Length: 287
Ligand SMILES: Nc1ncnc2c1ncn2[C@@H]1O[C@H](COP(=O)(O)OP(=O)(O)O)[C@@H](O)[C@H]1O
Ligand SMILES: [Mg+2]
Image 1 (cartoon, rainbow, N blue to C red):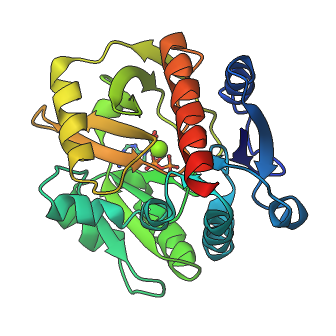
Image 2 (cartoon, protein in one colour):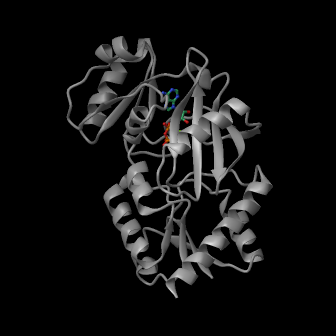
Image 3 (cartoon, rainbow, N blue to C red):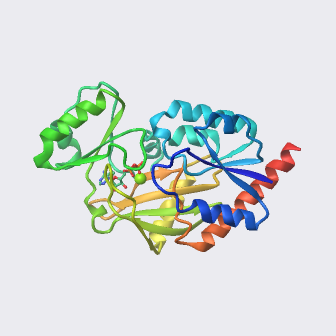
C-alpha cells in the first residue's frame, strides 16, 4: 500500500506529527511518503492508494491553487479528508454554516473584500476589544487583536486587509487567557485527546499542553461533528468558553490540523491503523 502524506515544500513551522506518523505507518507495512502539494512534478507523478492531507500549511496563500491540487489528487487516489470537506473548511465562512446548523460559534462578522467597515461601529455589535483576521488563514496569519485604546491602529489594519481580501471580525475572547483554547482531537470515530493552546497572534509560535477532555467537551465536540455529513478520517474541534461559561467553537479544523499525536501515543496508533485500513479499502475498490 502506498500512502502520501500531503505537506508543503517549505513548512512555515515544524510538524511534530510528521516523523511519528511516518514511522508508525512503516511499522504497519505501509509505504508512506511525503508529498508537497506545491511541487507540481511530484503531484503529477503521484501513484498512491490514499493521500492524507497533513501539513499543507501554506495553502491560505493561494487557496484556488490548493483546491485545484486537491481536485487533481482526488482524481488520482482516495483523498482524506475528502475534497468536498477541504473546499468547505478552507474558508472560515463554515462558521456561519455551523451556526445555521445550531452550533454555538464565536460571534463573527464577515466582511467582503473592499467592504466599508469601521471597528468603532463593530464594537457596538461585538464588544470593546476585537480580533481582525482573514477568512482564509492558518497559523495566525495576519490575525491581530485590538484593545479599545488601539482602535486607530485597528481601523488602519482593517482597511489594509479589506483592500486585499475578505476579512472577519470577532470579539476578543478573554477566556483564552485563563481557561485557554482547547483543541479536541477526533480520529476515525473517536474523540481521544485534547490539548490546551497558548494564545497566539500574528508572528507567534504554537505552544500546547495535554489536557483531559471533560464529558461536557466531548458531548459538545461530538454534536459539532454530527452536523458534518461527509465521512471524515480526522477532525479537530477548537473550543473556548464564552462569557456565560458555555462552550463555543473557535474553529472546526478539517483540512490540515495538527493532531498532537506526540502528546497522545494511542491516537498515533489509531490514526496509523485507520490510514492503513482506508488505503487497503481504496486499493481493493480500485483494483
Ligand atoms: N476572537 C478571538 N479571541 C481571542 N483570541 C483569538 C480570537 N481569534 C483568534 N485568536 C487567537 O489567534 C489564534 C489563531 O486564530 P484562529 O481563528 O484559530 O485561526 P488559525 O488557527 O487558522 O490561524 C487563536 O488560536 C487564538 O490564540
Ligand atoms: Mg486556530
